[in-house]
Amino acid sequence: MTTRRFFGLLVVCLLLAQPAPSSAAELKVSRQALERTLQHQLFSGPDGRYYLKGRPDSACSVYAEEAHLRFDQDRIVVQVKTHARMGKAVGSACLGLSLAPAAEVAVEPYGEGEIIGFRNAQLVKVSDQKELNFLLAPFLRKQVPKGMQVNAADLLRHALAGSTSTTGYQVTLDRLKIHSLQIEGDALVVDMDGDLTVQ
Picture 1 (spheres, rainbow, N blue to C red):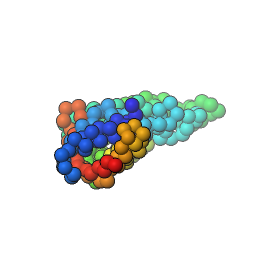
Picture 2 (tube, rainbow, N blue to C red):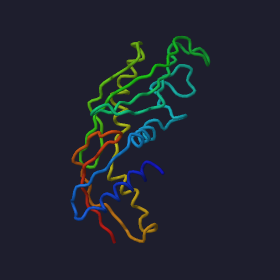
Picture 3 (spheres, one colour):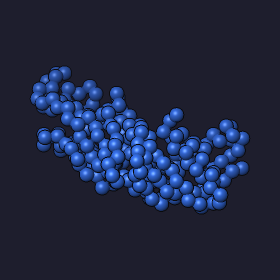
Picture 4 (cartoon, helix red, strand yellow):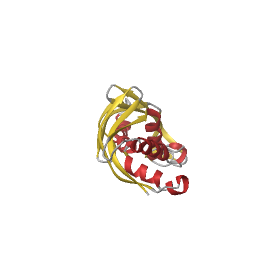
């Protein structure tokens, strides 16, 4: 099941279970679902890599891969493996340093309108090499939180697009608003409300 369909079906079930329009609903998003979202949205390049410098065919390059998430109190910690061949390209070889450190950034989840977002990125672990950190720090602080962002309403509308053929009813989302998010155990709990129309 794709991440899109996963989010969509959960939201539909929760919203349909409410007794009246605009009633609050709770959505639990697992750590694994957030991890898949990040991998799909940010690490969708060749071999699941995100190139900070160079390309797959470059002699010298820096890329990140294998993103993993863990929850730590009220923050989400993202760990990535980095691989750097830094130096001077001579033909197909890179003369210089080869590094493969793990790097970590901690982000805080928040909800705004229809968006599940992540902010206040704090570097937990980076490389000992200044040259590599010059590339890693902006990637961890900006690209990683942006790559995890989810528009819950868009995912739900996409999942509902085929509702007529699968259920016999046309189900549409009229409104979705996220009120708050918090981490509980191994899930991100989203408090929200919304309105659906069934025809």
